[in-house]
Image (cartoon, rainbow, N blue to C red; front, top):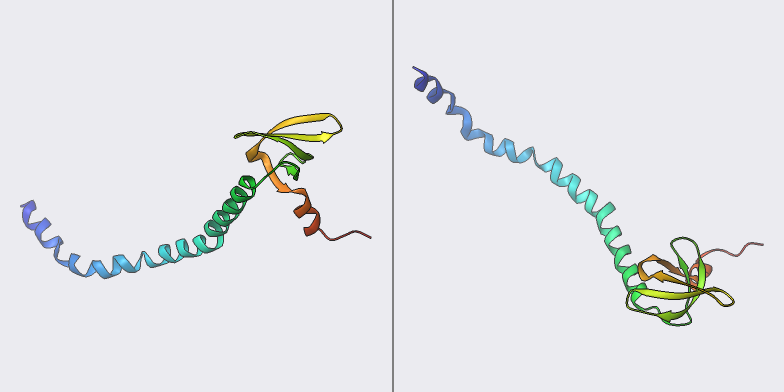
Length: 112
């Protein structure tokens, strides 16, 4: 008795394939928009930061993510020794360097 009812209910499934795909088009479109507005710029910024950290050398003036300005006096694979005042040196992880001080000073307009 239930076999006939289930067999009759599956007749309209053939036309749902096209309707099911058109339901995914807005989701695909949203993903493409998020990719170009959020994901891609973040990946580009991360790549530039990685290249900047890899190109650091002794004598460069840097700004850490904590806002400390200093000059690199020593380097290691993982850490940098930064002189923040005369005879005052601190060790900073390479990943905590946010910018070169020369580049940061040039990007800001001069105050009068």
